[in-house]
Length: 97
Image 1: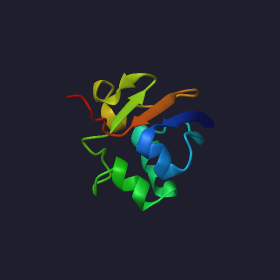
Image 2 (image 1 turned 90 degrees about the horizontal axis):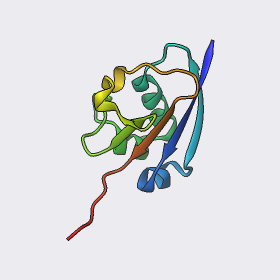
Image 3 (image 1 turned 120 degrees about the horizontal axis):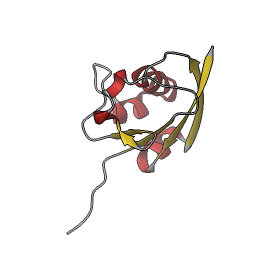
C-alpha cells in the first residue's frame, strides 16, 4: 500500500529544486529519512548537498518539520510517516542586526 506525502520547499531549497511543492507516493512504513533521501537523489547533487551530509543525515543548518513540528523532537529521520503527512524544509535563515 502507498501513502501520499507533501513536501514544501522554501527559499534557496525551492530555487535549487525548481519547484516549491512535491507530492510523493511512498510505500506504507517509510520513514522520514527514506523520503528525504529519495527526494534529494532525484533532485540532484546541488539540492542534496544543501540538505544531507555525506552520510545521508540532515546537515546541521537545514530545518525540517513534520506536520509543523521540528523532527529533532519526533525521532529525527527515523520518524514514521502516514498518509497526508506534510514535510517542510527550510534552509538556514540569517539576518538581524
